[in-house]
Each structure stands twice: as C-alpha cells, then as structure tokens.
Length: 224
Image (tube, rainbow, N blue to C red):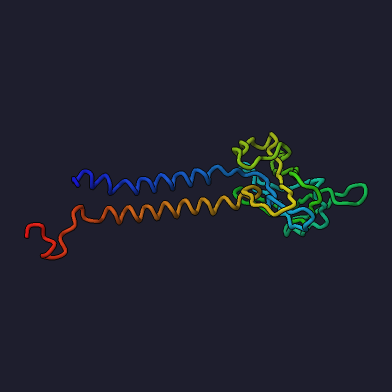
C-alpha cells in the first residue's frame, strides 16, 4: 500500500462519522416549538393521563394557555399546575370542554406541562385546539390542521398566524408512534451519533495499523 493510499484510508472513516453526526444534528434541528399533547397515541376506552406541553413561542414570554378538549375524549379531571390559576370550562350539561391557565409565565427557551385525565371513546385522530397568550398582547392560536406522522413538519408561522393543532391518535390496540411529544425521535438520534462514534473508533484503529506487518519470527521471513 502506498503512503497516499494509507493516508486516504486513515481519514475516510472519521469523515464518514463526521457526516453522520452532522446528519443527526440536522434531524434534531427540524423539531419545531409547537404545542403538543403526549402521549401521541391512546387506547380506546382506557383512562389516560394527557400532558399538554407548551414551549415558549418565538422568543416571547407566554402568560396564558387555553385548551379545548376533543369530542372523542371524555376529560374528567384537570391537575393543578403550580404557579398558575386554573379555570375549568364546561359544556351546558356540566361536562368538561376545556381549561385555561393564567397567572404563570413561560419564559423564552422554556416550556410548561399541563396535565389532564381522560378516557378516549372513539377511534381516529383527536385534535386539541389551543391558544397561547403572549405578554406582548398577541395570541398564538394552534388551530390549524394537525401534523401527519411521516410527513415534513409544519413550517413555523410566527405569533400572528395559526399553527398546527395538537393531535392524539386513538386506536383499539396499543400502537407505536413517533408523533406527539417528539420523544421517540431522540433515541434514534442518539443511536445515529453512537454509531458514528463507533465507526470513528474503528477507523482510527484501522488507520493506526502498519501498512505492512513485520514477520512474526524467522520461520515467517520470506527471505529465508
């Protein structure tokens, strides 16, 4: 092997690993700061704890959150949110139709969780429209068509235009889903990074080996 070939092989694997790490970071960077509900899937007629996750919007501070519960989910309890005042919204028949939290703050680069208990009673995709009040007086509405799993994420629209509503898929059987809070994406990203680091280690070991191994003993010397 020539010195040039040896140098090319020495740097090939680290370059591939670097590209894989860059790709993983690019995937991580596609996540958008949308209001979401986790879990992203729920089982029909099974009592479930739903968490409404609200990140700060566009570098602005949030001071009000209002959520309308979907028709397919019978929400029967709303957890207290420390630092916030909770107002439960009811239908004419007394059933819960939504909740509003005020008095707290979600600063830029932070998020808050609001938790409810409910039982899904109809299969399909349930939407959770919400409003996010901002301290500058504007209201970010999350009332647009929900994002669809497997399709590109909805573009950021800023505080003046509606964004995608949060959605939960209701099924009669437990299902695996990458949607909802975005949690399952991170193990895949971590796997990509760890795999890239492993490749880099293999590449360094391969690069550090001599191009031509010396004979092990006199009996292996081709000149004897």
